Length: 214
Image (cartoon, rainbow, N blue to C red; front, side, top):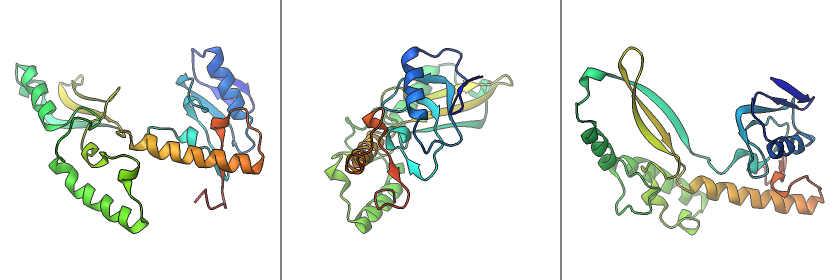
């Protein structure tokens, strides 16, 4: 651990100069409390450093929340052991691929059955809010139940006791990005109206007690 200053502490053994500079700039914001912390995987991000913990008082930085809102990570220990797995693991992989769309939904032609209950709930919430999701993402319904693209994955693993685990890193399928970009834009508009000067426009923030914050 390295205490860079009273507002910035790092647990990263490797920290390049640009990432350090970015984190230092973020740590100067007056509502950071008690300090910004860099994790071992810290690297340059959009405004805020990826792999950092940024606690704030009475304010929020949409860019620090990030564009991956809705991404998930879960590990589940199954009742199976390695001996229960088929010798031909290719078939297992193909079964998974058939069951779960592996893209961000671009190639989907139907809504998967497991997404239907959640979809009905989301449609109801959107109607109550007077919000049309298709205005922001035309194929949003087809993305539900998909894995996502990029670095998202499904993994079958075994531990030291030969117990079989399922790992899932799911994406927000573009919806998280749309949500983030909207609120980053709102924060930047508010910041310009306030006349607040920031070390980076992407560090624009919303203050508690304002309509934009809620």
